[in-house]
Amino acid sequence: MSGGGFAGLTVATALAQMGWSVRVHERARELRAEGAGIVLWNNSLQVLDRIGAGPDLASRSMTPPAYETRMNNVIQSQETLEGVRWRTMTRPHLHASLLTAARESGVEVIAGSEVVGATADGTVTFASGETAEADLVVGADGVGSAVRDSLGIPLKRERSGDGITRFLVPRRKAELQALEPDTEWDNVIDFWNLDPRVLRILYTPANDEELYIALMSPSADADGSRVPIDLELWTSVFPQLAPVLEDAARIPGRYYGYQTTRLDRWTEGKVALIGDSAHAMCPALAQGAGTAMQNAWTLAAAATAATDDMPEALREWERLERPITDLAQDRSQWYADTREMAKGNQFVGDSIRTALYNPTDPQRHEVT
Ligand code: FAD
Ligand code: 3HM
Image 1: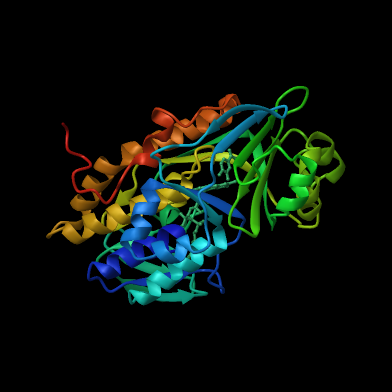
Image 2 (image 1 turned 30 degrees about the vertical axis):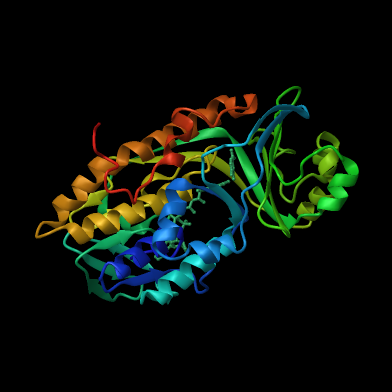
């Protein structure tokens, strides 16, 4: 396994629980997740339950009462998402839950171990110059994947003009309530402003104490995309969020331009790619990590069921599982290009299909 992020830890845990002997090589010296908050849906929550990470994850995460969308501070929709499983949390908490599940399942996680490449026959090469052989190699090493690049798999990158800077800050619920008493501050609130200037704040409570805020602006807007943030600009447009923007302004921050990575194929011989190395996507539908964990589970199941021909089993896995991930990528890129999320009521039809998917259901591909 190359990479100890959400994809790598999930596939490693699933494989170990299915009887494999598994080693995860993580380049970073410390095993932890960088970044702020995250939203997960049924497709990944089912997997987290199956690998035993569900209770720990639930202990410090929440399901907000609604996903609210505002334009110029006027409410467009409050989607209660009845019948849809979803939860918000911090990235460090999700990573810690996965790491615990991995270790409890007997996965060996080696930090400070960089993979430089792999070959179709299952040979992995490390930066140290050492090599190892495996029955299955998984490239879960993120958007800059060394495993993917060493295999020479052709890819296309599509960029959008917009991007986002993410922060984890204290909730400050009482101070926000004092500023806007009628607001339900436990909701996710997607505050859009398109005219006269494109500036958006996605407000996502992650638990009782921590709040994830994501500040979006076009990359062409130098002040809007500046880090640390231009506090005066952001508080002038979003005065009701001043207390939490002041916290965000004290954090260095990194502006991330939206982009999609699409590969010709996800497998090569005994090597499979999952997560951002195979299918990085824009975050509009909040499905990058979700599809990573979904594909981690289905890959583990497909590899375990493989009899003598691992390369063919991996190709069949991609054929069956790829369409639902392609859909999430395409819809998320479309939202990034059109900003249609600003209209509200967007979690319907094709935009919610990936969220509802259950990768652990053996009947999921049966045609009725
Ligand atoms: P990564 O998280 O990038 O992990 C890769 C790991 O591999 C890292 O630990 C890295 O150190 C390691 N590594 C890299 N190279 C090597 C190497 N050569 N050798 C060994 N190890 C290596 N997704 C959601 O589901 N919900 C959301 O709400 C959401 N919001 C998002 C918001 C934004 C603004 C962005 C940018 C993304 C968002 N995503 C979201 C997407 C999500 O963050 C990614 O899809 C997810 O982190 C991918 O996981 P991964 O394990 O594939 O890759
Ligand atoms: C959860 C989430 N949803 C949407 C975006 C976006 O459109 O940038 C980012 C997110 O973290």
